Picture 1 (spheres, rainbow, N blue to C red):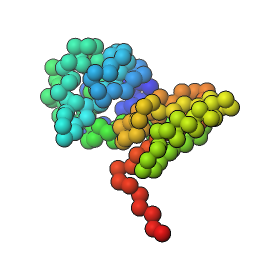
Picture 2 (cartoon, helix red, strand yellow):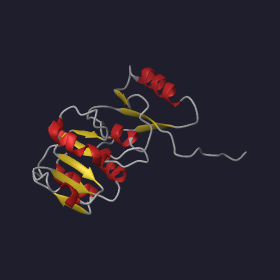
Picture 3 (cartoon, rainbow, N blue to C red):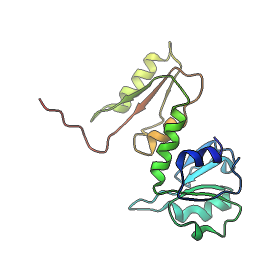
Picture 4 (cartoon, rainbow, N blue to C red):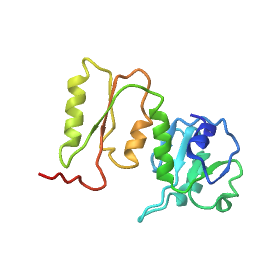
Length: 176
């Protein structure tokens, strides 16, 4: 995707765009996992324990020039060669990008839910179906409001089935 497409999907509150044609191939929220800085969009997510905005200068030094932020743009005005999209909620922006990306494909996505055994069932089913289908599954236990969108954004062309392990924020209670 290009930054212009991402801007159209996220509908930012404010933005500073130097290069709207910047190609985005990688989405990141962890400053330790940057593969190709020039093609990475970093989501500055604020949690109770940390704030992704604190890593922007370090990432800029590594070569990252595309950021989704929630703080005021004025705080980052000294990064004049950098693209910033200011949104209300960085996780929601990530989810919007994933939903847009998902709509580009028509193959089925299988979500596996429950209290226990999701990862093993995901692995087992993908191994069983692999001889007949080109299967992709989310890596490790990417099962959160961040992990599932990141997995969806890795959906490639040419596959026939995608497995996602999903853990819901609160367990579903069934009545007997």
